[in-house]
Image (cartoon, rainbow over all chains, first blue to last red; front, top):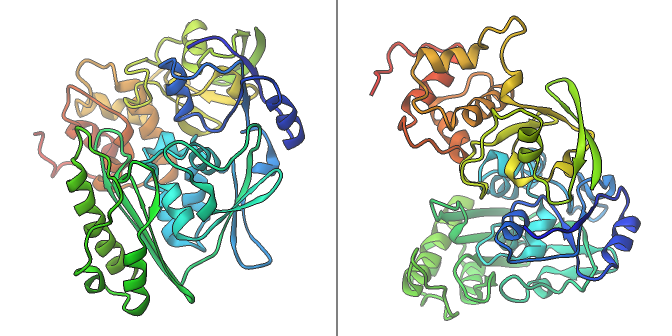
Length: 262
Length: 160
């Protein structure tokens, strides 16, 4: 690891000030960033830890009925505390392993936008709103390709608001060494339609499978997607699976998620 | 360099750290070498300690992030009279270790599990140990030891 300065502010304002330094980098739970730093794939001048800021933590229900999760809330805390949205709690409880879940945060996962991470699928399938220190970003406008988001330099996620669906489920086909999704599909049914978000599969990161959403809106059953072609996105091909394999898995996992959501 | 203070196994430990000093290096530098560095990539779990009661991989948290926290390591697990605690004793009784390298992390993960879930099923134990890798035992006796430490009958489980 290259050397860097370290700050651990207690307020959002102090964090934003610290992030104003050149090449400063926000640090969530560090479960991705710390290994990245060890590999010397990043060399920030300063790390600003966001885990000592009480305003960024906790789970509550908003006036509009959405589930509001602070950005520095850990996966373990979401697994235990998001009972109002069981599919989301289940997703959080199946990220990595218990020790990773005790450190990793929802804000960190969304800001990193790893193409195989679980949370981006939940946020996109739920039509969540990513609330930052300066604005509210709809999930549909937040994810901007592999490891890229709509966040500006120095902007941090404060909270994520999840509308609670009538039925939802997340199915992850795990890459067994990393526990990341080889393919993960989050299906959520709302009064105004069905949203299907796919992670792990595409080179551009998480995406919505529009054809499946249309088919499921009129018939919410695994059979409704049986006749669909696999999504046409450019799929990831690596030693864990070919693009064709991943495309096939998208359909299989979608079917399983619909069935499990009931 | 920042001076930090962490309460480790009930005792205050202070020292200067760089921003990039990992908690595991801080602990080992303080002479607490029971916490091991296996993979250094947050996969193997040999470095698991408890920070404010939660199991974490001490190779994937900076020492400065644990400033003011209560940290528990394998060195603090024995009973006050120095005898092995229930989990450690069960690992010995049921041959839950061979080379022993992963054992500190296994014991700390087991302690965290039993605090959350005092009578876990075999399946729950295996799930909980997803982030702890052992290259010797095949896990079977580790799982058996944790079942035994939780007070459950393991006499019907054959040693495989």
